[in-house]
Length: 269
Image (tube, rainbow, N blue to C red; front, side, top):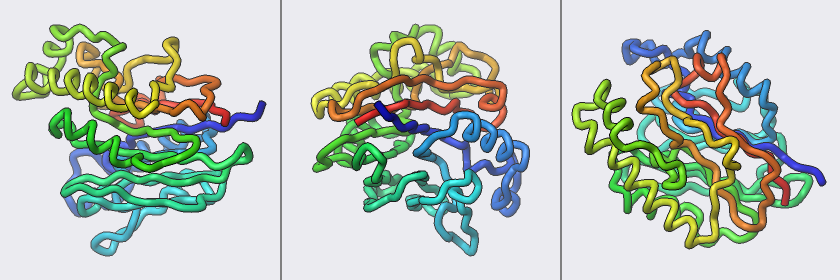
């Protein structure tokens, strides 16, 4: 049976130079961009959903064509907070798309004509400080009314309760970068409980097989202390999608390109 591949990837501030001045952040970090291109090329996705796709549409005279950067023929993209945005790239025709907006964030959904039939791919990246109940509401509202095969993905900033992280270890890891480690770590845990409860009620399930459920943050680019390691990048699917394979991908290149490792699934309809 034929299958297609979806990769969801948070590319950390649009592959900009880290620590640069505001005007310099308009340019690509060539080393990070090159590593991200290697990651995507090696995975060979048919559909690529990008979070933190800065300047994916024109803002203040600057625009980046992520379809061109990653060599895809089709793209939909939308900004949500000045230059911040989401992009969905595809090797198949995109027949329709729509945005979901709140005051400071946005989600994106695309109907894609695959050789197997039409599938909806939706992507969202809630702010890490957003209340757990609001994260759950956002994700549910993004896909409200969708019929047919559905894949919902992105940096959800929450932990699937089935991952069973050690809260004490997580708090210890957060202490290295957070002024409120206990509160911040608990928010990721509480968010996951509510998000996955609500998604389950909608008939959506974690699409990553148990064998592929590695941590997606942090990569070595940002933090080599893995006590804060957690899987917050997710792909969930409804019952009209059959998952063939899936994993959080960890390689030397993913450790250099972003603060997140990408997550992928091979799926059939």
